[in-house]
Length: 100
Image (cartoon, rainbow, N blue to C red; front, side):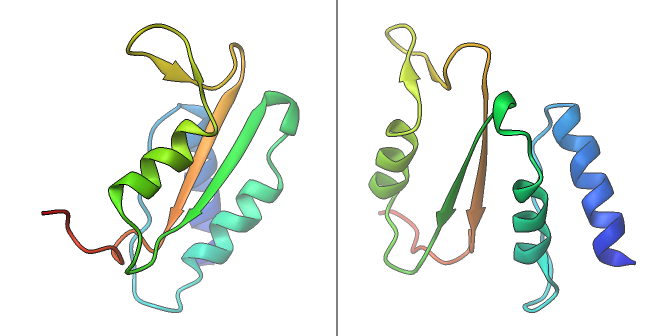
């Protein structure tokens, strides 16, 4: 029941173009729920980017990963190709050390 409810809420939030942060104890199927949701996304509407954080992930790693998946639009603006969406899933957000 929790997975079905979470999947429905996730779908509604993505339709409204709102960010989503799933939190919960280890082993509560957060990652599996997201992967199942992303698997069912229509690729014609955009693409998905899955980033797995670890204790060795740095802010530069994240920046490079994001920049590799977007295009420069203006001097300070980046985004997916025009008319497309990019859904970014960051797994284990709590893992990296804080930058100094």
